[in-house]
Amino acid sequence: MKDGSANEEKRCEVLNILARDGRTTAEAIAKQIGRSVDEVKALITQYESEGVIKRYNAVIDWEKAGFDKVTAFIDVRVVPARDVGFDAIAGRIARFPEVRSVWLVSGGSDLRVVVEATNLRQLANFVAEKLSTINGVTGTVTHFQLRRYKEDDVLYLEAEGSERLVISP
Image (tube, rainbow, N blue to C red; front, side, top):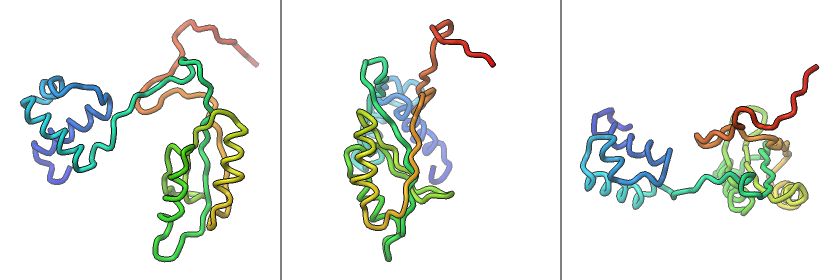
């Protein structure tokens, strides 16, 4: 919010609603925030044209769909380039099709890269042949997703009473 006005709060509410569910209709949003449908439609169109709304995504449970995916979180240490810092290397990494996200982070590494592959070999090839060979990359540490419980506000928890092995010490 820029100025904290009631109008800005309503505009932010529209974005929050769409961020939770991009298929929410303008009619439903208008009802929730007490604005006209035309006003909400105009605001959404404005956000789309300004690039505030980047795109609309479906959230897929790949496991339920019967597809195996390997997700890795790769911490990358880099030497920042003169005049552009981390941006040049981050931009190069972001263009690989396997890469889902790239963030500049604090801590022991510089970048956090989220990669999705169909199997471990494809992921290993990405790290060995693409990522680690980029000029300026000095090291990587790869963490694998073992189980997803919640992502993008969607719960993936197992239902009560599911068939789960009980292991006790």
